[in-house]
Each structure stands twice: as C-alpha cells, then as structure tokens.
Length: 459
Ligand code: NAD
Ligand code: UGA
Image: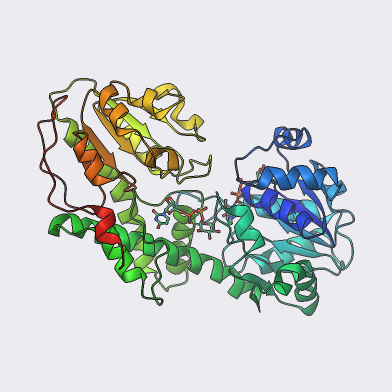
C-alpha cells in the first residue's frame, strides 16, 4: 500500500518507518523543514532505540521517503495517517488546531477512495468532525475517515509497534476497515489481536487505556507513601499484588510522578471530556492533582534534607527525561522540581544521557557524566531510571560528594550497599533511615527495613 504520514515526530516517524518495514511504500511529511532536512541527511531528530536502523535501511531501499510538501506526499496515497501533535489547552481540553489544519491540507491532494486515518490521540467525535472538515474542503469527493490510535511507548516504540498487544481500528464504513486490515495484515497474520470497532469507541479506548495505566502508577505511588509510614517496602508489595494475573506487575513501579507528552495531557483531556459530558471522571481528576502534588513534595523533601543553614547548596539531579531510554523531557518531574530548587537558592547541576531540555535554559549547570554532576554535591536526586544510574560506583560517589544524601526516586540503588558506603539513602516507598545532621561527610545510620531486593523476591 502507498501510505502518507503527516507529522514526523515520535509517532509519525516510528509508524512510517515500521509501515515501510511491513512492506508498504511510505512518505513522511512534516512542516518542520529542519526536521525533514535532518531526516534526508540520515539524522534522526529524536532518540528512539532501533529506529535509526530501520530508517536507514528503508530509505536506501526507497520504501521510505521524507518531504515537506503535503500535496506531493499525499497525491498517490491509499491511506493518509495524521500523526500531528494534539497539545493541552489551559482548561485541559486538547487543542485540535493542528489536526484540523492538517486535515484541510490533505483534502486538496486526496484522491478518490482514500482513507484518512487519525493516529494522533484525539477526543471522541474527532473522526466525525474531521470528515466534515475534509468534506467542506473537497465537496463531492468519496473518501473515508478512520481512527487508529497508537499505543507505543517512547523508548520502546519500534518493538511496541511491530509486536503490539492489540491493533485498534475505528471504522465507520467497510472501506476504511478493509484498507486498515490490509495495512496491518502482516501483524494480524503473526497473531496480533485486531479490534475493529467504530471511530468513537476507538477514540475512547485510547483515553481510557492511558488513564487506567496512569491510575496504576498513581495508586502504587500512594501505596509507597503508606509503606514509608508503616515501615513496609513498596517493591515487595508491588511484587505481591502484581503476581495476581488480574492485576499484573506492569506500571506498578513507584516514582516521582508520571510525566511525558501523554499521561499528563491525556488524563487532563479525559477529565475534561467527562466534565463536558456530565460524566465526571473523579478518579482521574484526583489522580491529576495528586501527581502534581507528588512532584512538589519531592522538591520540598530535597530542601528539608539540605536544611536551612546551608547557603547556595549544590544539588545534583540525575535524570531529566520523563523516563529512561528517551530524550523527551516533556512534563518530566525534573521540569517541576528543578525550578523550585533554583527558586529556593540551590545551585542545580544536572546530568541526563540524552535529554537536555532548552526550557531549563542556562539556569542549570549541565555535565557530561553523573560523577561530574555529583562532584561537590550536598545531595544527589535521582529522577530517571537510566541503567547507568543503577550501576553508579558508590565508592566514587562518596569520594566526590560533599554531602551524604541520595534521594532515589526510582529505587535504583541497593539499599545495603548505599548504607555501607555511608549514604543516607532515601528510597521511595520504604521507611526513611533516621535523619543525620544535614552536614557533610557524616556517616548515615542504619535503616529500619531490610534489603529491598531480598524482601521483594518471590520464592
Ligand atoms: P511530536 O510533537 O513529536 O510530532 C508532531 C509532528 O507533527 C511535529 O514534528 C510537527 O512539526 C508536525 N506537524 C504539525 N502540524 C503539521 C502539519 N500540518 N503538517 C505536517 N506536519 C505537522 O508529537 P508525537 O509525540 O509524535 O505525538 C503525536 C500524536 O500522537 C499526539 O496526539 C500524541 O498524543 C499521540 N501519541 C504520542 C505517543 C508518544 O509516545 N509520543 C504515543 C501514542 C500517541
Ligand atoms: C504512554 C503509554 O504507556 C503508551 O501506551 C501510550 O501510547 C503513550 O503513553 C501515549 O499515549 O502517547 P509513554 O508516555 O511513552 O507511553 O511512557 P510510559 O512508559 O507509559 O511512562 C509514562 C510515565 O509514567 C513516565 O513518567 C514513567 O516514568 C511513569 N511510570 C510508568 C512510572 O512512574 N511507573 C511505572 O510503573 C510506569
């Protein structure tokens, strides 16, 4: 099939490359000229494991092309996928400006029988709305609009796309369903479950799925808070409840609050849809507030640990991306926490293997390695679960740091080892060791709970 992808971001580029990998002929179009120039020169504008290899191979085989001319990109297409951004508006509703603009732009070159497919995350009713937008622009044209929400995770996008848990297609007419079935035939043949429904259900599935996953994260974060108070260990509790196949272990890792370009935006939109239609999503409303509270509470915890005596304390933040294996820092915990630390007078030294968001500007001192960031630090704050932080050499860290406190918001470090090296190791969801003086070079005293990994291992 000949496929056009409008928008060459995380979703558009991954989908385009993977459709080419499935044997289709694909053109990715983006209005961002610099993005297209980079892609044409063989440079990926985003970091996504495994993607560069597919893009390079498929471009060489002429199965994948890039351009900034929508008309040229769409002229021969059997299906045109819209993968442009759908950002939040201040009231939480999503801004459909980009997708409506893209729909108008594709209307002109669309040929007869084409299927316009919405891959962006959009509120229920958008497919029907875009059918009107295109019909207004191209009266008399016979075409279809379908919804095909995307469930890939950043950092795992290629694998998620090529081995999906399910493929959801919303089609309001048989032609749309037939074309989508053909496009996904290689994956359906390999056993990927296909759910074919109408466009409204498909749009709703996407929001309900993200809200539910975010609720799991929010739930375990609250369980973690309780574990800290009762001397429990959230990792053991997550393991214990996750072994129930009705619950499952996935998305039960406590952290500094969920971020990214999706969960925060999509939960806000889901809540707004509920309010607008008189069916409030109370759980999601509460979740949104609690998630923000959590990020603020971590900033306060850092300041408490430092104490008020210390002037211009040096805080080393390890991890700015909203999760590991991505260079994306949109709505990451770091973006909420770091400005509060700076506001309170801290000097923030930061490291991230991939993300260096411009929004933090010159306020942060960036370092090439975690050790450089930690040198002279009063406190280390780990926010992202990069593997290299899991493997931190604690002896070296102890030698380099001025203080002895590590706030480990991803439970990456081994508690026993950190304590052995003299650290006050504050992990999420386990009782805090008794506070030492927020001074320097002080030895942390033992904690009340045992080794986390031992406690968590099912026998
Ligand atoms: P992104 O910001 O990375 O990419 C969007 C791209 O669209 C940009 O490069 C932009 O220049 C381009 N664009 C905007 N208007 C255009 C137009 N008229 N013509 C051509 N190009 C245009 O966004 P993303 O993260 O890929 O997300 C896209 C959509 O997919 C959103 O609705 C998002 O919620 C959804 N989604 C994202 C993910 C994810 O992991 N990022 C996963 C599933 C769904
Ligand atoms: C999420 C969904 O997982 C994808 O299925 C969906 O396609 C995507 O949103 C979207 O709609 O765009 P993504 O945002 O890439 O994917 O990242 P996740 O892996 O879901 O993580 C989201 C946030 O939750 C991160 O901040 C992460 O650190 C946090 N999280 C996740 C936890 O704190 N604990 C967990 O157990 C899991």
